Every structure is written in structure tokens, then in C-alpha cells.
Amino acid sequence: EKLNPNEPEFLQAVKEVFDSLVPVLVKNPIYMKQAVLEKIVEPERMISFIVPWVDSYDNTRVNRGFRVQFNSAIGPYKGGLRFHPSVNASIIKFLGFQQIFKNSLTKQPIGAGSGGSDFDPKGKSDLEIMRFCKSFMAELSRHIGPYKDVPAGDIGVGEKEIGYLFNEYKKIRGTYEATVLSVKAVGYGGSFGRKKATGYGIVYFVEEMLKDKRLSFNKSTVIVSGSGNVAIYAMEKAIGLGAKVVACSDSTGYIYDSNGVNLETIKQLKERDNKSISDYVNEHPDALFIEGCSGIWSIPCDIALPCATHNEINRNVASLLIANEVKAIGEGANMPSNLDAINLFLRNNVLFAPFKATNAGGVSVSALEMAQKSKRLIWTKEEVDSKLQEIMKDIYQTSMKASQKYGAPGNLVVGANIAGFVRVADAMITHKVIN
Ligand code: NDP
Image (cartoon, rainbow, N blue to C red; front, side, top):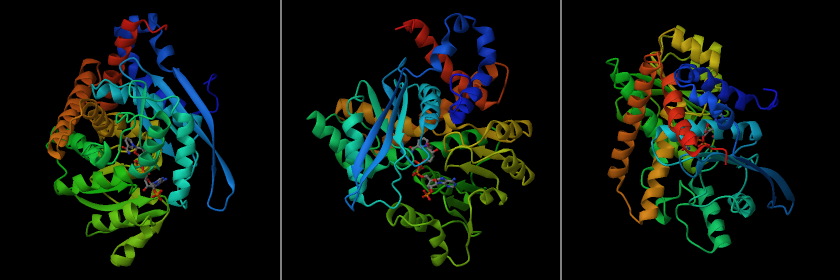
């Protein structure tokens, strides 16, 4: 805390992991002797840079860009780029830090990083977004590469932005390095299934967890916060497994549709028309739109999938969900629940699927994209989806086994953190990462 006084999100992410690691540290004193915690908590490199660009009215605008290269013990740095006005060093460090454990859990050869900018894509024309992306890549290109650092998308960065970034990288380098950015569109080097992978992966993981308790998405009532990339494909898969999704949200508020949300309308509004979710009620007059995001959790549900952003679920929201007899929480966003909320869910025996495990499907399929492109292969949708399902099952089983081995059976927060940590820590010890 003394070293990072103005980084609350980063400190929160570190505390959540370190609290879980106590049993593994007690059993394996080598980790303390080799100062693994001190090393793992410090980014290998933190880059901050200016991003000047010119808007449509010929005004010069200035944003701040970041890339944190957190840990490369098991592979090149890998993690998303976020464009959102809230982006600062604390957010980027929390995202980069959690990525260490998530990427390790996938068992793919990928290290951890994160990056982004306080640029707000909302209300900007495509031309302005493209100009911003070109300027951002002018600096970022010095720091990334297929064997160095492979960025992907996150909030505010989807296929369109990745397309602008990739094209600029290609021009600067003069080579077609198809594995330097993931989440590319399928037509020029993307993988089938990447767009849907995070959302589908969340539901595959939660279904495994439910199965162990003889529960299922089938006939369950589900609430999903957000209506971006992760939320839309989590809803699609949940509905595919027979669930009824009755509410979802965006940054303006939420909709409640007791008949079950119409996903085609949500896709039209959010993926194609770039509109507020409030417009949903124009087509579905029986549904309600309510301003403000947090009210969504007052609606009773069996399964809650927070898929919007960090710290959506605090102690009060958790109490409300528990009072309404929620059976399971599947975290979709990064760090959507704070520590008080997590502890409350666990104390009340609510099944809890933590984000490092559940949303690892996105980065897993990014790693599969890297594998395909480096071999110049194209796997079918079905092949990618079946590999994704295997990976999510494996992450569930690995996390469950670690929770049992280290004295917290069924606690997937502890299990995922420990399993993710051990692989990276062992690699760091083997490397004697004093380099
Ligand atoms: P998007 O930008 O596609 O969507 C974000 C969605 O959340 C939008 O609908 C946005 O609303 C909404 N939103 C933002 N803030 C709030 C809020 N306070 N309350 C309710 N809704 C809100 O991002 P993604 O779907 O890609 O990312 C969502 C989360 O998942 C993030 O935490 C991200 O780090 C995490 N994640 C994403 C992965 C990916 O593959 N994309 C991989 C792993 C994790 P609006 O439309 O109004 O802006």
C-alpha cells in the first residue's frame, strides 16, 4: 500500500490473490525464500505515453496511453487493451496482474499484460477512432510483437478498433505478423469463435459448477449485467442451454423483460446501431427500462452473471441477491465483485465462479488464434468451440482440485488463484527470475 498509494483497484486485486495463497505458501516455503510474491506483484515493465490526435473539427486532442508488461515467466505478455475514460495506471495494473493467474490457468504458453487509454470512443466518428488508433499504435508498436507482447480487445476495443490498430502496425513494421494482435476479424487473420469465446466460456464454466450440484442453466432465471461483447454471448449461450434471461444493462440503465430478453434486438441496438439499451422498450413495449445500473440486481434470479465492469457487486448488492435466493454467481467481467461481496456469497453457500477462471475462455481462444496463425492453419468454428469447452472444463477441474488440496474444498476463488499461481511461481523459480 505504501508503494502504490493511489492504486485502489490494483491493491484490491492483489489482496484478493494474496489472501488465497496463504495455504500454498505455508506448504511451500521456497516461494517465500525466493521472494516470488515480491516479484510477481511488480510489473516487469510499465509504459505510459502521450497519444495526440486530431478530431473532425481540426482540434488537437491529447490522451494518455498505457501498456503494462506484467509477467513473462510462461510466455509472451498477453492481455487486453481498454479504451474508456476511467482508464488510469491503477486499472491497467489490476488488469495486468489478474491476467497472470488467468492466463496460467488456461495452460497455454502465455504471460500477462494489459493496456489501454483514457480515450472515450463514445460519440466519436469512425474516422476519429481510426486517427486515435493510428497515433496509439505509433508508440505501442515499439513494445509489442508475436514473441514479445500480444494485445487483444477489452472494454471499448472490439474487432473494428483491432482492425485499425493491426493495419497501422503492419504499415509501421512492413510485415504481416498475424499473431501480433488477437480478436481480429475472421477475414484477415482472426480465429472463428473468438468474438463469442469469453461469453460462451463463462457459461460453459458455470454449467460445470452447476452440474456438480445437480443444477443447470435449463429453466433457470438469469440476469446479466452489461450488453457488450461478453454479456451478449453469455446471454446467447445461456439461452441456448434453456435459461430465461430476464434483464441486462448498459451504462445508462437496465431493461427488465419478464418474457425473456430478445437477444436479436439487443444485438441490433448495441452491436450495430450503437444505441442506448433504453430503446429496447420501443420494440418491446411490455418490457421496462429503468435508469441507473445497480438496480438490476434487485430482480430475483437463480443465476447472476455480472458481465459489465469491475466492482459492480458490493456487500449491499450481494445481500440483496442472497435475500432473493440466488443459487449461483458467474463472474463475467474482470473483478465485478468486491471482497466483502465474495465473502458474503461464500459464507451463505452461494455457488461462486470467480472471473479469473470463468472469463479465461477469451484469452484461451486468443492463444488458439496465435497457434493457428503461426502454423498458417484455419480451424473450423466447431473445432474451436470444442477446444474451448475442453479448456473451460479443465479450468474448472483444476481449480476444484486445488481448492481441495489446499484445505478449502469447493472454494473456487482459492482454487483458481492457487492453481494459477503455482504454474507461474514454479516457472519463476526455475528461471530464477532475477534477470
Ligand atoms: P464492451 O465494451 O463490449 O461492453 C461493456 C458493456 O458494459 C457495455 O454494454 C457498457 O455499456 C456496459 N457498462 C459499462 N459500465 C457499466 C456499468 N457501470 N453498469 C452497467 N453496464 C456498464 O466490453 P466487454 O464486454 O469486452 O468487457 C466487459 C467486461 O469483461 C470487462 O470487465 C472486461 O475487462 C471483461 N473481459 C472481457 C473480455 C473480452 O474478450 N472482451 C475477456 C475477459 C474479460 P455502454 O454500452 O453504455 O458503454
